[in-house]
Length: 390
Image 1 (cartoon, one colour):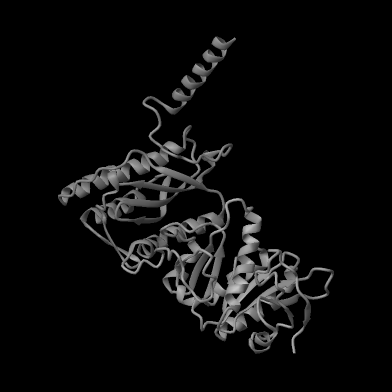
Image 2: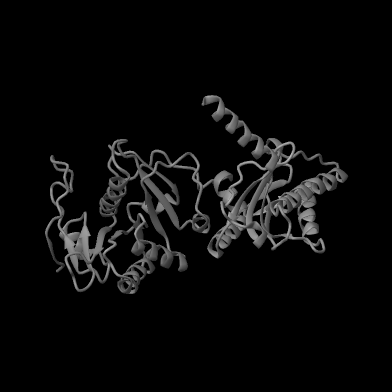
């Protein structure tokens, strides 16, 4: 029985090798979309690198790449491949980085039995003719074997990939440049934060300065879509007047606020529960915000036994306490729990007197802080008493 299974396994491996072709596939870490018919056409995000990651193509300066002769040869080669008559593959977005190249390739519908070979051929041509053109300028180029590819299955993903390609030089500068705003501050020292807690941050940490007015906002999933214009409008009005909105930006309501702040290029603080690594890798939509100094990402170390759910909720409570620690800031919890006819705004983490002076217009309710919220002996959080603000 065991020999039968072994024979079947060997036959499967042999069939796989035959399907890949002689010599095996040169494509590494490919993410094939199982069940997709590539003969219908496809959009693919492709990356390939110089051997040893040697910066042969130039250096990054700000949001541009200052290309060497080899880098110019790579750009010329990509352009030439796009001009081939009758070609089934075209690069619609590209960037030549110092040690690698990103492309978004569009594969046209084709009758070829193995459509992805056309993508491999495009990459092979770029590598070969870049090497030839660079050699004419006395630059020797050696490539890593193969390439990485990822299919883009929607317009949204295509737009994200194009933005990623466009922002790549700027992201490199943010991560590795002279100022390197994406290098993590560890630990983060601030009068707003308890000395016994370990916080880290990346980006413009001046947004946490003691004199800043911070509104730490948590928005419940009980809010309805029709509530969001009014809620977002209040927070935008506060942000325009100098408040810094802080949130985990996870719930649908919080994400709507994030998009509104980003559209008006207003500063904000984003809290995450995951530990920040030495150099932060930004999401596409965060790149410009970091470059313009209007975003800080903060994280607090949590016990390893705590669940991810509790960690996120704990970050919301910790943000409210940090916001109220100085600068006249406040925490706000917005919900429609208990069958409320309209959203309720509840202040958290500050005294009633400070709430009256906070200046965050439109807030009508405040939750008084109990001894447990202030770090009482039980360690459990009491919801407090809700009453209208004077």
